[in-house]
Length: 372
Image (cartoon, rainbow, N blue to C red):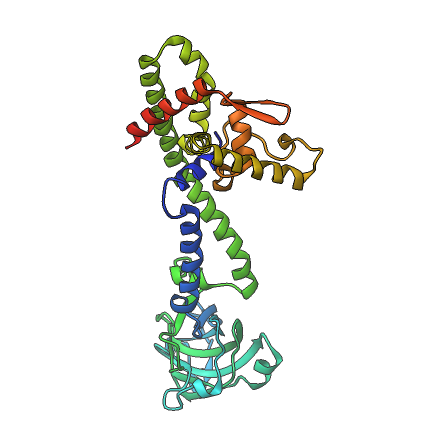
């Protein structure tokens, strides 16, 4: 029996549909995540692209002086650094002008030194390239202009900084934007920098997110198969062992010749259980019920094709777990009766095999008592 058939067999053991429950849980979880869990607010991220000293003289050279604003930088143990920072919105919502807090403008500060020059050198759109601006508020603080930053848009700023020679230049994002809980900082120049788990999950464009969906779905299905396959195997083995036990007990209680007569019923029970056998018992116990079954059978044959045998569109496939509609399908039930020798056909009339029917009924009684 294949894995799908095993899963289907497990599914039929519950009053509710297991597969339906899994699908409902999966899509319900996606809906809940989309509506209530997934953060759709803007995500402001500062990323240090470069932090380079452009003045770094290791040796004292006689007569060498570097003057800035009438100060000898070398004697003052200072250096010039170029800092390049990209400021972008990696969230799913745009940053509008109304989102900025004028009392706490977006910008950055440095831990030591002074900003000599600041400018925007690149942007993802012409709008940002034209309108994004930088104002040096004081020697260690700069402020950005209040511009609209759509999702996955950014601008890049370059800063020329005069800072102490022995200090490590560090920046601190500052400012307040509505809906943004924290300004993120990443240093791509550092080997130790790692994105947070949340950033790894939400990073990427819309198309990246769309392409992730089938990957997650396939991974979920594979995980489900890995989890369910052992359960299906154990459940199937247990079910088969129970059926074998019922058959052995029945064999021990009846004549050996009768066991040979019932061999096909045993095999049928192994594959289909008691559901179809009970359906056949009900139809054979009442002549009116049996005639009703024949009427439905003939109607289905006639609708399909008067010249077509029922086997052409309904088969009794060994090893297949019958669908609910197959159990009550008149063609399936009647062909099962013929196959098991419960009835025989001569021309257009059908004759019941009472001996075989009694044996089947006794077997059903024993099997049902073991299931109770």
